[in-house]
Each structure stands twice: as C-alpha cells, then as structure tokens.
Image (cartoon, rainbow, N blue to C red; front, top):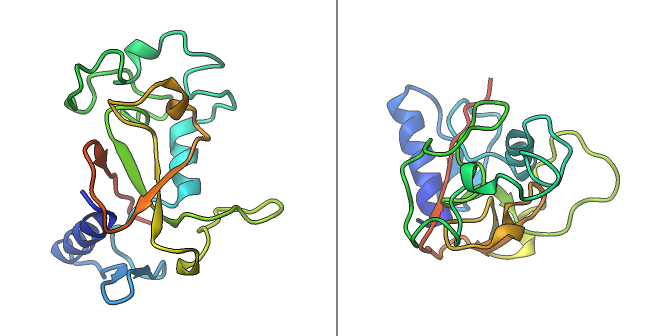
Amino acid sequence: MTWIDAAKYCNALSLLSGLTAVYDTSAWTADFSKTGYRLPTEAQWEYACRAGSITEYWWGPDTNGIGSRTWSFFNSDSITHPVATKLANAYGLYDMTGNVFQWCNDWYGPYTAGAATDPTGPGAAWGPYKVRRGGSFVNVIILFRSAIRDNMDSYDWGYGIGFRVVLPK
C-alpha cells in the first residue's frame, strides 16, 4: 500500500459518504478545510497512540507485556494478523503499534522549533518522503516507542504498511 493509494482511498470514501475530498490528486496536497476523510497528521497519530500516556510505550515505561499488546518480529510468524487481536490502548484503539506501519499525512522533515498545537508537518519541499508510524510485524521493539518516526517514499509500497483514517469534526 503506497501513501498515494491511502490518499485515494480517503477521497473515494469521502465521496461515497457525501463529503468533499481532502486530497488534490494532481499535487497530492491535503486541504484541511474539506469535510472528508484523510490520514492523520503525525501529531494526531502520536496523540492517539499515547492515549494520555507520557511513557516510552503507550502501555508503560518498558517492554514488559509487549506480547499481549503488539505483533512484532518475535511473535507474528512474519505475517500480519487481524485487527483487535491484541489489547487496546486507553482510548480503545487497537494495533497502534506493530502489525503494520501506518501512513500519516505529513511529509517527512524536521520538527519546527518550539511548542506547537496540532502541527501539520513540513511542506512537500522536503522531498517525496511521507511519515509512517507504529512499526510492523517484522520490526523489533524500538520502533514501537510512541515517539519513534519513520519515513518512506509516497510512491513506494511495502510489506506491512497500512493506514487508518480520520474524519475531522
């Protein structure tokens, strides 16, 4: 699944739901004033993953109990698994880490200096790479930390990459 495929899905779901599409398919930019479905920003993804926690992992300060919370290299048999077969986080969200990486809306680049409220990330000038978060079933534990970020070319696809959608209020 490429980032482009995920954005196309969001547009199609938006139109099927009678909403306005968020993604401009000629420039692959997002118009946050539209009413449709879209990928979460990196900040929104981390907020959802942490579910109010401030620890390294959404379930605590260390890897104790990781096997009951996430699919990884150590317990997945190198395959993806159905969603919600591990414990949910405090917000009731499943598979925020492990199983599959999740595309975010943001282009990959440096964070802006200073505090920000619900930032949307850098512009496309940073190159073709989009943020993906959460690690996958083939990864080791460090990628399951709530703050770890990764990137991939928006036109590339990979084994173990998926997405979740958000619908703004």
